[in-house]
Length: 180
Image (cartoon, rainbow, N blue to C red; front, side, top):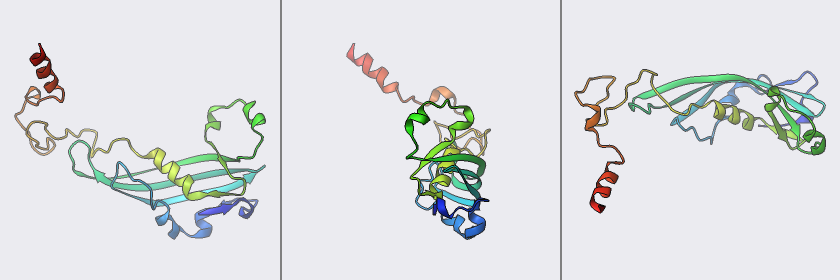
């Protein structure tokens, strides 16, 4: 949803309160949901205010991802979300002045916009992408699948020992022996 900076009132614009919560469901359309197979935005809040040409954004989101555990392949539904703040500065701002300013940790959430408007879906995409887990597990205690017999070790025990499974580099040991 593209919002022109000139449309943001002095008191700020609560995007989903003014446009309706129904638009939340379509925000993540087209986004790669990896490591999930399906990703939905459940709730979101976005408040945009303008101060001296900069667009200050305060927001939060709740999302729900569905996929399969990386260790045992069981189905997993994971809710996640966070609150965030970011500042968007016009790209046309004098870069010489910007280069002489010392950045602090709170300044690291600064982005740029074209000077005319802001694409709010991109802001939410970025925040959701930053909060996606690297790996998807059903629980931290998940014991995974046995590499020898293939049993799900969360459901049943197996009598395999760790040395029974061939390693991915075992073939290299054989090649070295044949060469000598």
